[in-house]
Length: 510
Image (cartoon, rainbow, N blue to C red):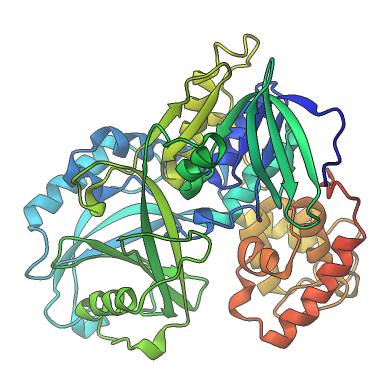
């Protein structure tokens, strides 16, 4: 049912609620544009919650001579670590050497270049390391030498949420569970047809410019709108991961070199797990329910077992996930060698329509700046770039010790495990959740595993959460702990709270 009679006119419509979309919305709103972002599902419900959880330069991209991309990503690594210290943490990576690994001299040269391109004030320089099996090395006996370098780990879905909050604070309207089902060139601007994927209601919106940041759906969306092949095809590559009980006691991550030339990361995850990935496989068919294959699981287990004393079997796999990356199609290149850089494609027509191809989590902020640069001729009063020195919500605190002390003073009754999780998820914004709370009982009903009604209410009112899955998998990672009966009890509460909200499903500003 079409319910809009006089469509609203805005400056910029952003299609896609992944990391690139929310980054563009935030940058544009901060420069004075009226912005609406729409996402057909939940924020970060696609590729942006299914990455390898890294903010990194991409050491292996040096092999393919992508020096510009690596330098850009390393500079962004520095910016993002300062913008969101609560969800982005420096992490040491060990590269163990097998007989069939890349030559040590080649790795030394690559790591030297990696350090040189970065010249970081935050990350230590790389170094050679030795492993002593008798002193507790996690590796098989044949591995005695290797290297150490540094990158960062990120909670990828929370990075999306924080950018959406930043966009909202600058005046952007964020509409989740809203799909763009049509795009027409009107007399003076784009006319977009939108559909609420929950109620089925349809509305229209007018926009002076549109950005298609729909990730893997970027080319498909253009074809659906205009009934013609898109100007640039997307190479859809699936990256799959497995989660297993923690493989080692230390806090470092590992970069494993397989005999086929690929690298696989083993990363500490949620205290008790190791995250192993990624694979690279071409994708065909539906993009909505992409899953890991048994061959991919076996591959990742095989790589891990080549290096670690602790041998994995299929029964050790606690969970899996797969994300689809829309890479720039470079004909004839193996998926491993296709560039991870991004490209902005403008459609010829009366009004601006920019489509985003490729990109990495690490470079989303720079990508957004490039989108704004391409729109400078359209919006003559566009403000200056501002995100490079901006702090994301929750990132304003002196250091973790000071923040922990402040939260303990506010809530001395708060369980230490809950305090730690809130700090790592919300940073200084945890104080908003505690506003007006005087005791543990004031947090309301406990749904298990440290999740209280107070936090759920906050996520619904301030972070666009609409379902149990939104909360358990993208706002938190508590889904790994919840049993089905606990999920159902919590889901009932979420439905009740969401149904009591206004039709606009707005977000309260605190």
